[in-house]
Amino acid sequence: ASQAYQNAECTLVPSQVLITFDHKQKVLSENYNESSEEYYGMKGMSLLGFFLRWRVLDNGPIHVHYIDCISLNSKQDGKQVQGIIQLVMPKVRDIVPSATDVTPT
Image (cartoon, rainbow, N blue to C red; front, side, top):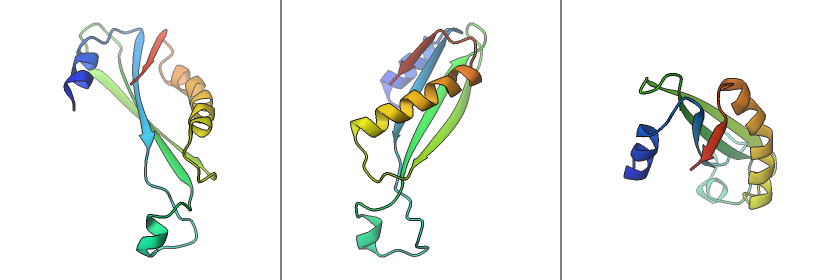
């Protein structure tokens, strides 16, 4: 992990959730062994992963949770990301109900 992530984790307090998210590889639903052109092409379902980190107690252990979102839209643009974030945030609050400060990184 980078120094910035380590610093952010060290300063987490129980009311905070640190979220890292990024696009993962696309999924081609119709093929098991796709060609390299298909694999690196623009087709497929987008997979956006979220990594949550939080503490329950001051200086307690860091808890983690992963959320993966699949979009049938192959575009990986700001509109898609914004829409998925709006869908994921209520789930984050369900997973960590004590969170009042949700910080994406």
